[in-house]
Amino acid sequence: APAVPAPDASAAAAEFIPPANVYDGVALLSVKCGARGVVYRVTFSARGGGVDWACSKRLLFGSLLALSSDGFASILWATVAHRSLDLLRAADGPRLDVSLSEAQHRSFQLAQSRGARFQMLESPVFFDATRHTLTALQRISAERLPFSQTLLACAPVPVVEPPKYLSASADADAWEMGGVFPSLPGRGTLHLLQPWPRSLSQGGQGGGRA
Image (cartoon, rainbow, N blue to C red; front, side, top):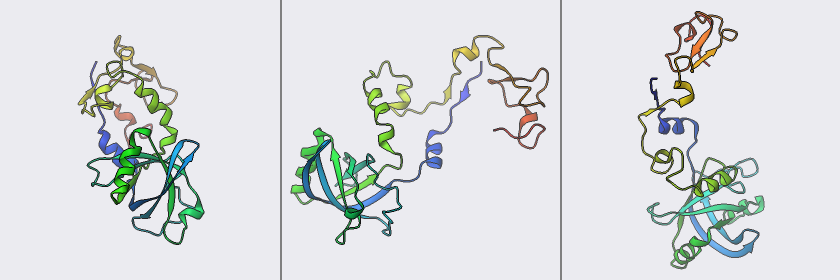
């Protein structure tokens, strides 16, 4: 069976994922204990300004943040622990509560004690919705993780072999689609591993490909 060309993952990501939001001048204001452990209240400025915090979906609870004081040569990961309109609209600059993993508390506090100012990137993908899936993936050994070369090593894959259930026999990839695409030749059989039929291509009889 022919191999299926792999899509360009980077191009797909660039098309569907908006750029990260950038915040400058991130500085520590106070430390307190919260439901998720130690919480840091920080002040910052939104690059570009003019954010309507009441309507904006920026910096929602659980959003993933990347903090760096050295141009992102090193990164501290954090999440939004508390979002308050009153804090975000503070006269002396927006404020936010963030939480870090236990392993990163010392690095953050040490950098702040030295007067370091951080930049902050906010992931455009809502992190809390995928947190449990990512945590489950971390529990799987790299040797047993499917697509580990792609997921862990980010290695480019030139081709993706079709699954065995589609290549087990000559007709394993055949689907009866005559009821959906009346213009299909023969008995209306569509072979998933063969080139897309011309009769279904854009402008042809039967309409464009979905």
